[in-house]
Image (tube, rainbow, N blue to C red; front, side, top):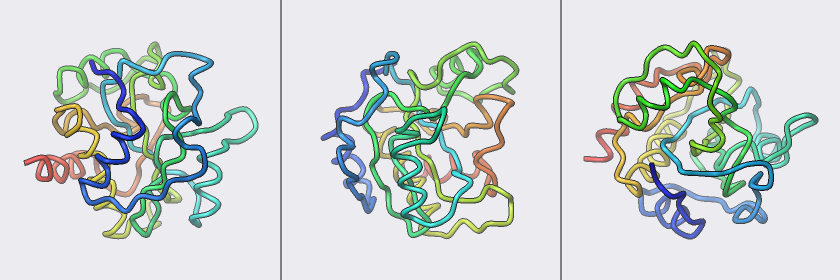
Length: 196
């Protein structure tokens, strides 16, 4: 378990890892901390947005929508490989998931298949939303996949976590399918190589 990274340290960690970072509005203080805790943190969660277009995607993740206010993540990774920081603190990205999965993430080992929704993931995970329709046909450009690996590695390096601290939303709950279009094992291999 770890204390959440500060906004300044997040920005510095992403840049050190080679990410092209865009700071969006008041991202440093934009959060949902008033509705619950953020931290201790244990890992990074990867999502797809079911959107296209940078402006639309970033705005949705920053502001949210009726019934689910933003921020919907900490960073939005667009198809061009940029990481748009939209929030810092608790965000509405993970929802409820399986405590057995959380225990595996804390132990930095392979997660079991999720079958419960008994744990608040918004408290425990950093979230990166990645611009993609999530239909299995929308391509994942090389620059975007590289940015996902770099952003995940940046957070892991800061906390001295390994690649098993990075999961997909589909590994947290059986209610989700994201990210769709690449496997999390493949992405974790890329993250492991970066962390070496």
